[in-house]
Length: 193
Image (cartoon, rainbow, N blue to C red; front, side, top):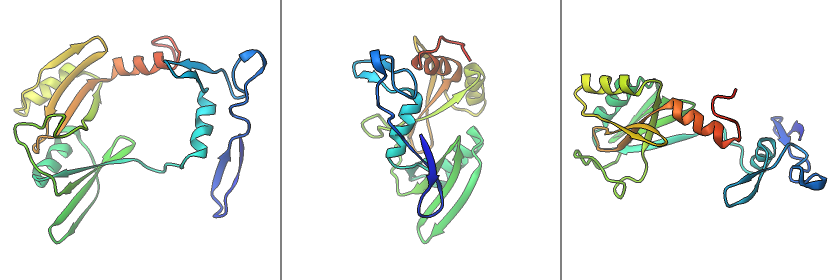
């Protein structure tokens, strides 16, 4: 990988021979190639970053959630999950509140349609996922706020499924099993640093 400055003076990285295989199939010049499930060789993490360098450079990611019950939804995400407000905007009938969402943002905007009984995946294909250290403590917090919630145990982890005041789907998951899945997906043994 080579670094330099673009026309605007911003530091950028460029890939150099990221896909060039080593003799004997031992991987790329940037590290070992690990096979991906059903997709042939998988690029090393460094080579994958180079592939991304040739794509667009992401500066920030976010999710826009259009809701009908605007005030109730903003209060729900602020109070239940402790999401910090980044900014708010009003323009006639249009309103938005942008909340910090991990390393991303959740922008709640007017213009949605509420289904108080809860939306199905057909009505709302996306589900917001919040990871917690203690799923049982999360269940107790939900119960203390009058939100019916039960923990569902699966081979891949424990989750709680709830809905916001507009009926949008929310999943709460134990982070420990997710972290182990991520590590095993990288070819590292579970629990390895």
